[in-house]
Image (cartoon, rainbow, N blue to C red; front, side):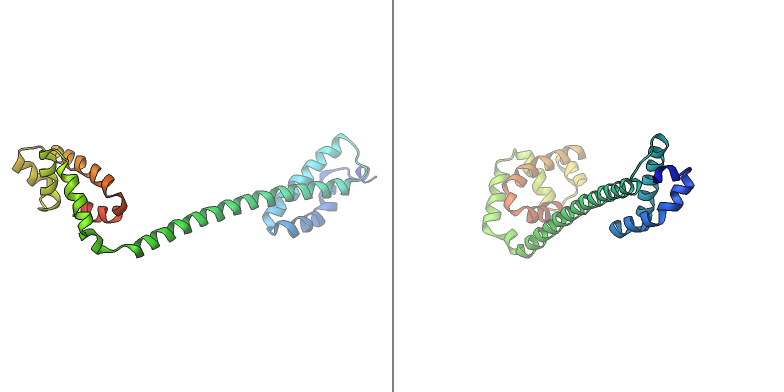
Amino acid sequence: MIGTEIHNFNTLYTKFYRKSFLFTKSYVHDECIAEDIVSDVLIKLWEILKEKEIEHIEALLLTTLKNKSLDHLKHEAVKTEALHTLTDMKQRELDIRISTLEACNPEDIFSTEVQQIITATLALLPEQTRRVFEMSRFENKTNKEIAEELQLTVKGVEYHITKALKPLRENLKDYLPLFYFYFFFQ
């Protein structure tokens, strides 16, 4: 029986480390990971041998190495799949942005349909909100200038602009990239 031949951990380590390492490395393809697995398995095996004698120690060692290596490889497969999924999602999102930008026609913003949507939406706003918004976006006045002219606070001007942008954003949802260009970058 091999179990009785092994009197200390150094003997176990010397007898089985090299072939355990080569076996494990042939599957995990990483020396550090293989060393960790083999060390863990040899320590576990040593603890079992201290408790009882094992008739087929090499079979137990090989089975334990196999299982630990499988656990590691399955974990790597999950990580790889997650990375692949993230990469696919990122690629799809990039493809959508590219196709959206390619389909973007700057002339659309000046189309009759867009102008009608803007005019109709602004007509539904309260007078003060509409006036503040028009001064900001169409007359290119600063919030401070609008506040002074209409005797409002700058925060009041910001409130009216935000209030006007909400229905415009909703009504121009089909033209969202152009909406942001037209109303946010002025």
